[in-house]
Amino acid sequence: MRLTRLGLGALAVTGGMVFTACGGDGQQADPAGGEGSDVSVVATTTMIGDVAQRVVSCVDPEAEVKTLMPPGADPHEFAASSKEATELVKADLVLSTGFGLEGGLTDVLENARQDGANVVELAPGVDPIEFGGHDDHDDHGHDDHDDHGHDDHDDHGHDDHDDHGHDDHDDHGHDDHDDHGHDDHDDHGHDDHGHDDHGHDDHAGHNHGTHDPHFWLDVSRMAKAAQLMGDKLSEASGDDAYATCGTTVHDELMDTHEEVSKKLEAVPEDKRVLVTDHDAFGYFAEAYDYEVAGVVIPGGSTEAEPSAREVADLVQTIEDAGVHAIFANTASKAPVIEAVRKEVGGDLEVVSLHVGSVGEPGSATGTYEGMMLDNAELISKTLG
Figure 1 (cartoon, rainbow, N blue to C red):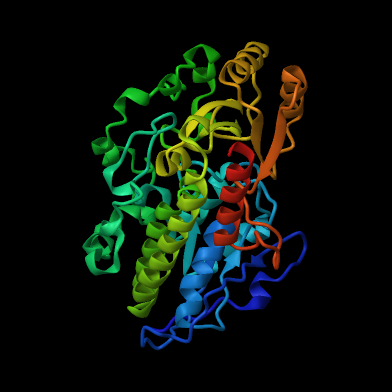
Figure 2 (tube, rainbow, N blue to C red; figure 1 turned 90 degrees about the vertical axis):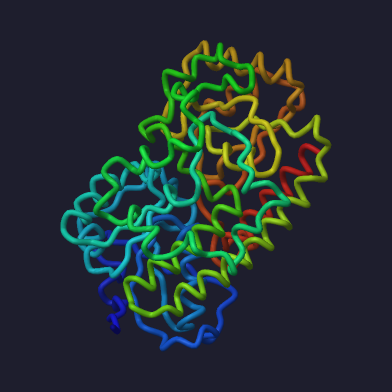
């Protein structure tokens, strides 16, 4: 089966319709020995788009993944035009995060799914955690990633991922993850860190639901997503080369995971405490042995607003923990972050990280790997 690539003309910038191509590195000339089947792919976020580009380019160096959001866009706020929404249906595969991350695209993605689009949500397939649920998963320890190796990919078989197809995502797979032991985190509060008096429970997940969608901040989970992308591309195209290339990109990202881990391990254990602009670092904290002491904006979205009490409680937490930095999303424009900084005073600084988007094309953070390595470097220098 050979599919027709979605032409550039169909995704051109016209009448407010903006589709950008994420350039990926590590492009190879069909090492999997496949036929280089053409397959049209649209990704929602720049992180997904960059990794998907690497998988696709491994099979066909000339193919391009179309990424809906431009660099710097906030996934929580981005909204698609009606023309962009129409183009989603034309793609062979639409890759999204899931669990409500793309808040402004919820209706667009659902409508596209109902119109027959093959929409795949990645977060449910990468061992998701719940908000506030930074439990220790044995398969995500720094030394325990053998189960992600390409020799043992039975769990990436096509049949195993049927539940991530567009037909079964109305409930976002919540029932499928009971075995992760997060039943006690339904309130999404920060009880794990001793800050339950912050009142963040009222804003839990901010329409994300119970599961945390920010999986890409754990590179090992993005590696697993790369394998899932390859599997789904193979299903859509009938070309097994995509699954093989998904394994290749998975293994390359696991190398990046180790690099990120080494940078972050340079920070003394008693200083591995984060205060962030919103609740996005659960996966990061679990994967790299850090603690999230508090968040400026309650819930898992940048769109929420903290109450006066929550701000006051956060200021107290920062002072008590001796934290001297707030890590904020480069896309965040929340004035409350600056208000908290002024309230605390002293040497408290706001450090910008690439959380919801890669950087500009050609920059050090213009790829997913570059973004994560740069984040690790900034955190290490700030806290070390």
